[in-house]
Image (tube, rainbow, N blue to C red):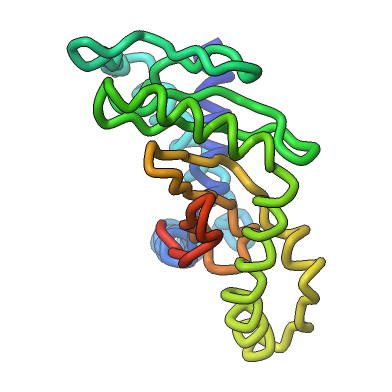
Amino acid sequence: MRLVTSLQRSKAALAHWGVREYFLLAVLWLTLSTPLYLAGWGLLSVLSLPLLLLAIVVLTYGASALVKPLPQKKVQPKPGFPPSIEVPSLGFFPLSAYSDSLYERKVSWCGSEIGLNLSIEAVELVDSVRRVAVAITSEASKVNSEVTRFAVRELLSEVNEGRSAAGQSELTAEQFLQAISLQSITVHSDETYEFMYDDGELLGGHWIEVHGSLTQGPIDVDLPG
């Protein structure tokens, strides 16, 4: 199983390489193959590349066999905070594995499943956040429409400028919305929210984060990542 794991890790590493990494690989390959070619190996010198990749697999295998991953420390609730929060009609929200002030679970949102996060900074705000979670999900269609229209208005022209400069055809609003995908919504006790989208590689791999509130609607958009 370790050999299979090492192969999978090597494949994943190669898949995430960028121009710089592949350029360095090409330089290393030339460094290895040139002496072989000059020694009379001819076209057989190209074998230095698969040998190099084999060496990567072997090293990855060795590392996975010798280096044990550090155990992850489980996030504990803050003093006085519950390990999970029940929201009427939505179920139980366990504490996030990454934050002691965030409770999260998957919910149905406009035909897809997303993460709904409850941001709770103080234990006395639990009921307020519950109400916001119920309110935003009960008006999912309306809120989703407001946020997507806002994202199109704020970002589509920027996306199309980049595509035109690269010689690509411009996107319609519908194509833009088909490319991005909603991943999570975070709600707060003051009725504000953040919608987090995967940009579908339209904006260089950035996340699309739309901020707003139930009373004012969408307010601004950030591109973290």
